[in-house]
Length: 216
Image (tube, rainbow, N blue to C red):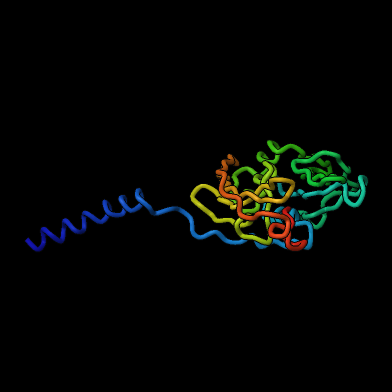
């Protein structure tokens, strides 16, 4: 009888684990604050985390439009030597940022010293292949209009989950007087989903207490 009871207990372990998984065990750990260097262009940090497909070994992330429309800045490059000529200052990109003056972000791939520019988000997904880093997932969230509040974790944090990443990001309301939280999910295929949450700050004094609270 004792042996029989021990066997039942042993066989019940997988069932118990299945029940726990079904009724309350969530994937992913706690959200972590997005710790990027906000004193510089943080897109350069995101680009360092890009892992493109195996066919792309010589590439760079570029920015045009700052401080003027003719200036091109290399934010990150995969190799020390990229190209013998100058890169084009394009007025389009997979990500555009700015109010009065726009800045344009795009990828250049060099093959036999010939540059090919990636300026569309769909082409960026093809370039990245699988979305397997936080940086790749975050740029997709940014492209889709979500902002980072780098002074408040309620609008600027992330965690890794099965098949992708989750972020707590934000959008501004009432001309910046309020900020609403969004749970944003980006899977390994680049598919993005979002869930609207609560307004977590009210009024300019609370939402923009200093310059570091400005969203990016």
